[in-house]
Length: 495
Image 1: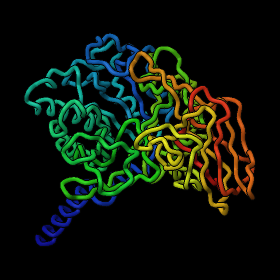
Image 2: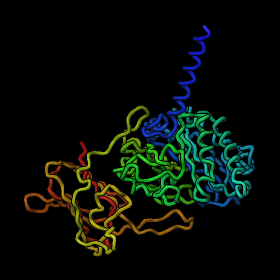
Image 3: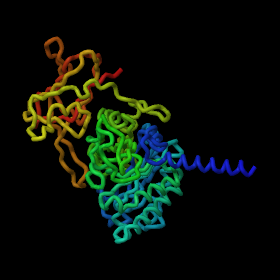
Image 4: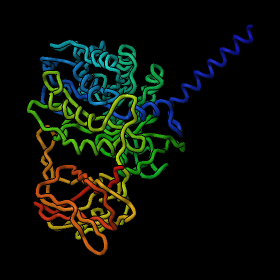
């Protein structure tokens, strides 16, 4: 009998050990990563003291009394997320200013000391349970208010973080993801990321953990690798280890994204999580003036791009100073979900088949650069960081296609000039292309299949009522306010 008990205990211990090991970074997806990929699509919520000062970042000096939502309604936030088809909610619990959306016993810079004492973390967590969504949190490493942050003994502030994260992971139910930010203000090994990771896994082994700017070009050096360069396995290195996924906010991954990254000679699997704003001004915290939201076509194409290839997307849908998401903003998120046909338990939809990817492409003119980085080949390289740029206002770019491949959709991402707004983050983007056409080449002649006499927007989607075959496709600019530039032209077959 005793032998059986000992054997059973050994088996249970081995099982627990194996389960714990599965949650660590590994060469293949661990359980936390598989769960993350399955979730795929979350709603980011930026809300805090910055919301009430019309700024994106603050230094921890805004008086706590400034936080004063008049109609705080976290239930409405999560209800919107459910109606929009999101699978999880990612809440800012503490931004770089140090203000906490829960009543932490380790600081007085929190909602507990404010005029509106509602524990927002609790309210959102409970609403997620109510509406069947998973709950995730963002927590800033950088803290511009907490005194221990400036102590020469870096461990004192690490202990502060561990204490706060213990509050978060023990008082608010299951947390599926921890999104860490602000690591640029210290050396990577001064943040105690390994301690944070182990703490989180102790409370929830299935929680996915990462730090913004996860990957670097050279081991031990702070040269972050932009996602558009991540096209080779085992070429780039962890800056923060351990991590379960990659982040570079708000960059977009290449369509040919690779997943294997190195740490001390070992290869580890890491998916990527994108972050985008629903706001057309690219602001994260909502501002007092009503600001426009992105066009539905652009959001749809960004959704497809971001969730392809086992990667994920969180889209920021922020509440305003009343404490509610503005109705027109909520409706845009819900409209996107309806168009995509999203529902919990149903696989995320995919875009069609890209028949133009990496096909030979050439432009009528190219802006001069010694590295030839503005060439026509940029328009179908699957990278939204690269772009074709012309020298003339009347210009064109054309690409080869396989005549056997049918297509009935063309999506185009335009590079625009930008006007920075006073908060240092938000911007207005100004189109260059005013009029344009799309032509196809067959049997020795060009045929125009689409033309437009107004600016295209950040992303123009042309849905054709019939399918076409062609040996070439040409995008032709007939009027522009400045030499045109395009990030990407995607020729797609929608079955």
